[in-house]
Amino acid sequence: MEKIRKASHAGSWYTDNPQELAEQLDGWLRAAGLAKSSDVRGVIAPHAGYSYSGRAAAYAFGNIDPTNISRIFLLGPSHHYYTPKCALSRATVYKTPIGDLPIDEEVNDELKATGNFEYMDLRVDEAEHSMEMHLPYLAKVFQGYPVKIVPILVGALSAESEALYGRLLAKYVDDTKNFFSVSSDFCHWGSRFNYMHYDKSHGAIYKSIEALDKMGMDIIETGDPDAFKQYLSETDNTICGRHPISVFLHMLKNSSAKIKIRFLRYEQSSQCKHMRDSSVSYASAVGKVDA
Image 1: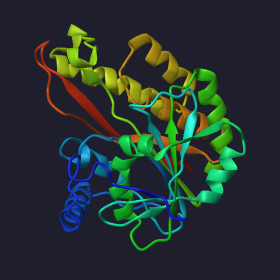
Image 2: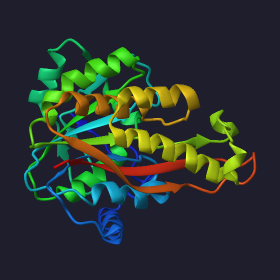
Image 3: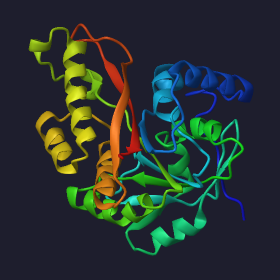
């Protein structure tokens, strides 16, 4: 029986008008001006409301060549529901205003059989925005192509668990029909986020935030999950998708496919100049086969 996950954030975080949404995404993808490449096997992209991060996200999704991909793994952080594990969806289809994406139930069962995954109920699934914000872009890019998705809600994992899930999922990286969409915003800065790290040597606050984020992005590009872990423990940077990114780094490290992550875009929701200001950073990257 079909179990639907509604597009619960449509109409608030992005428009629920199909034509408007399609035009908006098309416009951003065109403006990014990226060439499609079959070497792109994964992305790291933001998940804020489209008025904030929609344009930046196009730099992740604009590179995708949908021709040979039949399955998309979604890795998103959990904002409202606590679990020390990774959780799979009970839904059979994820709705978007511009086309629905069916769940690959076979892979879901395969993952569940490992004993390392739990199921999230539909309420938890629909409350979470981290993966939903990638869906309209994926529906757009894969329009007309028969593709299934495997949403994985990544909980508050220990370093050991990140490595474990990375090893478990690495075999899927070796299958070129699989694609990976990793969801994360970068620094959440300001008193409302309880994070106000400021290195005055960089000048204005927003420059300090950028330097901090860029340092993290450079480390992610090295593909070293331990160095990323070290960076997080030293800076406490509020990268909300740190667990999905870490799992992805462990996946790439444990797979025989040589995939290199490269960041293509960086933006901030606003420029912090005073300690009372706040902002969220958005960074978009592609994981590309390294010849």
